[in-house]
Image 1: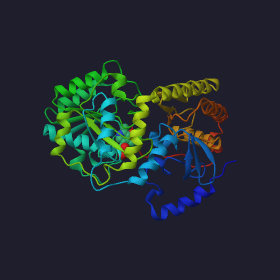
Image 2 (image 1 turned 90 degrees about the vertical axis):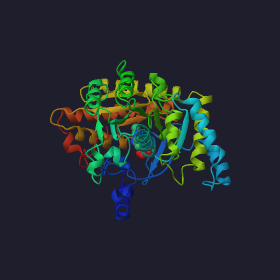
Image 3 (image 1 turned 135 degrees about the vertical axis):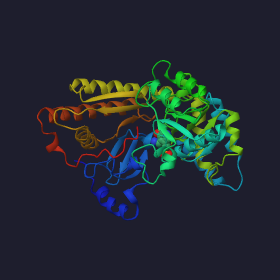
Image 4 (image 1 turned 45 degrees about the vertical axis):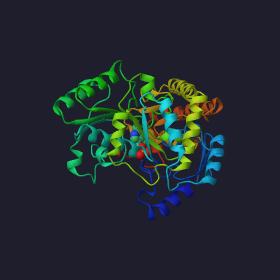
Length: 428
Ligand code: PMP
């Protein structure tokens, strides 16, 4: 049986100097029940990650969907080693910034100009500020998760520390419910600077939904922003905007743009991007060279090899095998999958007397024992070979069988070796 002793011990050490013991909410004990989970990693390679107790896992989290080629990709590392000798951050801009910008412009339908940053939150915040400056308006409509900055997080339940005056400027609307956008736009007549949404997360857009969003946004005199921090360089080399054929005014990228190196980008129409001459977006590390080197390698890979098709095929196979493991164990009323094959969501239902959190915690407890690291989504990378995917299926099959038995016999709660996860904050 896999043990997590070193992870558990280190949590105490980590929390003595680091609030939550993690830099990232989604990597913290808020998501991984203590006692049944690996809490700290030591290294990763290809499709695998190792924890502090030397347990090895197939990684379906893939650094929160930032890894698309697999960990430690050899060709990428060669370029990084070369760049390392030349410098990481220099005192002047470099040509690499334009080279990567040109590659993005080539790949992304709406990209006329590009600015780089480090986190997805930097890019979404820059896009919103650009829209506010360009339109001279303050209000923003949001749909999805857009990062940790005040303007967005103030609209969620996790809004502590955000001035009320700021929260009041952000309003949510519902995906695939065009009437929810329409009514907010009407209510805030002539006040909306931007409509920002994830072009897709759990659900595919209904026919005409994204087109209607664009049309209503423009009719209201606002800027349309697609947050492609996850969908970019994952759904397709041109992002969800290419898949669904709708061009936003601005879009934001991060995660998969540099296979785990910290890089994000705001891209869009030249006329709006040039507002950047007035708007202040600036950071010491915006032109940092290792991440740009990684991005160049990744983007060239998208141009020369069909990375996203490979991700799609692998994700589709995993979805198919997961569905069959669900059906073979008669669990369709408890688990279902939704979303794009490359970023597929695992959805849970409460059943009998068991809550979603209890069922999900039972699943985590058992799947971690199988050596598969998975949270709420399948974040596919190219390193998930057919052999690896078949292994995941076998693990799912065994875990679902146990889950079915624990539900049917009523023993699920008794079998839990940790407190169920607490739903602290629904990011979507
Ligand atoms: N937008 C979306 C769609 C995201 O998924 C995320 C991160 N999960 C962000 C923005 C924020 O990115 P970051 O965490 O890199 O700031």
